[in-house]
Length: 463
Image (cartoon, rainbow, N blue to C red; front, top):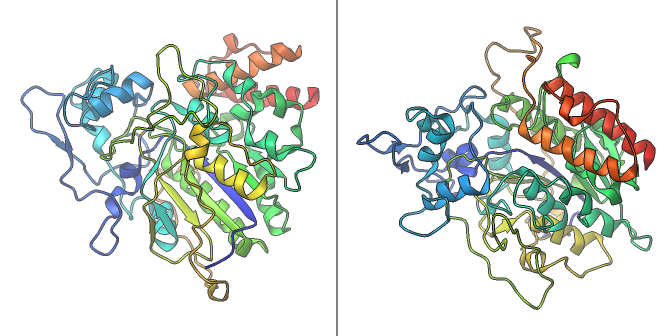
């Protein structure tokens, strides 16, 4: 077996479920816990037959409005009721929940659309050429920000919603642990100018860890990566600069995220650090999209620190969220590897601590019980893969926006970028920093992009 990797790179994308993205790769020769095509959900139309999964997901325009992925929506999707009571078969409420979000019973069927290896070529190719995890669950049965906080600190300071403006500022993260003066390893966070981590007060005062994503490829080619690298996509369009969001959050074009995945992979593949690096591509939560596997319950362990519970709505963080895609890439991984072990985002924290931190005490029982992935490399040192795999091109939305020179349309900001802006505003108020624009003055995606970029620059100057 290969020795543990020296560099870990994590690319975390947005709001897609495992079945939606990779489930239809299942075959007699590729036995992932995926779909056979017979999976259904009850229709939202009275008397109509069940709605099957279909292989016709498109890169854009399928999921508008954005599917529900707040705690109550996820309860409906999993249990069929907003209270999360087990009262029948689970994972049967996706169509009905999306129909309510759309206020259209017919539109509820769209939540069952799935990609294939042909329509999602980049992620599918990497999953089959390296390793796929078919039991990686989001950490929280809820939205993006709590899940991303769990990915960095194995808790969300009791927040179960996007609305806690204080939680990102207060969280103790694994970056703070790595930053201990006695610790020999370092980290780096690559962003396109927006990140919930920018609102973290500790990281505000230690801005050296933040780098623009535009530098990632050159850093790779120069062999300049730390032990732990976390990459964030762009979360919203930047019409003024002709840039599209790469997060894959519905209803942003999935092909833009496929392009980002390809960029990260190719930068590492061409790097002198390729053989010593493990790349993890994972998604923060399922985004309200269909998956057929019931998330596991968890049992708190009093031998470790508690996880702050959510008060409203009440929740003890003792149940995982819905499955998400997760793919490991390394030249020390056999093609076609399928990892059945249960992971969640706390596994990132636990693995980083195990490999790169002197402080081995877990934050809490969630981290203590999360499986680590330091052993996923399955080829001996003398069998490193030397072929230079060339990725297929993403299947782009029509018309091709880039070749046709079509800029992003001016539209409303996403709920996520507004939540990030509010968290930034909260932290800036604590630090006595006042941006030229207020969050209440954000009306468009461009406003949100400009605000977050300005806020990041102000926080960097203050830090």
